[in-house]
Amino acid sequence: MSDLSAPTENIMRMAPVIPVLVIDDVAHAVPIAQALVAGGLPVLEVTLRTPCALEAIREMKQVEGAVVGAGTVLNPKDLEAALKVGSEFIVSPGLTKKLGKAAIEAKVPLLPGTANASDIMTGLDLGFTRFKFFPAVASGGIAALKAIGGPFGGVKFCPTGGISLETAPDWLALDAVICVGGSWIVPKGPPDTAGIEAAARAARELAR
Ligand code: 3PG
Image 1 (spheres, protein in one colour):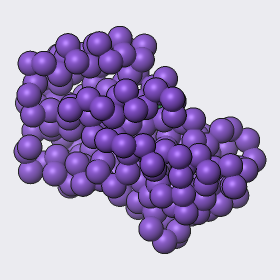
Image 2 (cartoon, protein in one colour):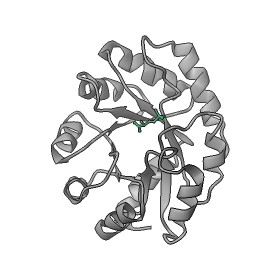
Image 3 (cartoon, protein in one colour):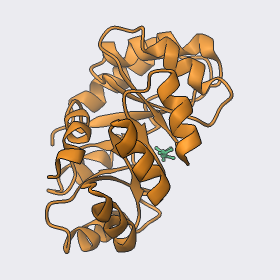
Image 4 (cartoon, helix red, strand yellow):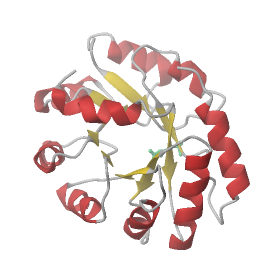
């Protein structure tokens, strides 16, 4: 693994599942983070898809044990905004050279989205070896990841997109997979913290 991806891998190894969060009310941020951490999922990806996402990241960072990153980071401007509120890692749905270089310059772990061999080659050129495979199911699922992974021996993935508690074990069983991402753990709307904690616990117990 390149040194560049070592910090990313450390984060990927903290739990089998990275919850993908869409926070639409900043008041939900801390209770959701507390429930996830209590359930054993410390790595939290807050997508920059809602007006309060940046504020939610700032709030969640106060929760002891939480490792909070920004998702849906599309360009260097998003990256800068995410870093300003203290994001500890960055996730993107795809990879551009501009974004990759900005993350390298900022020395922040980046999990760049890839869906095909060309994306992975762009990432490798920049020095990345750990990728999100997105959208995992729509891009051909496990068969596609196996076929894509074939030529790229040392490359590892966090498949995300269309994965559930029921299907996660099949992904986690692959050598090329370190963890998976998914939104199933935190349904939309006012948080049912007991339900979130239980869903986190079930995800935490997934073998890999
Ligand atoms: C993402 O934002 O990374 C994915 O859309 C999450 O996919 P899911 O909602 O199918 O888990």
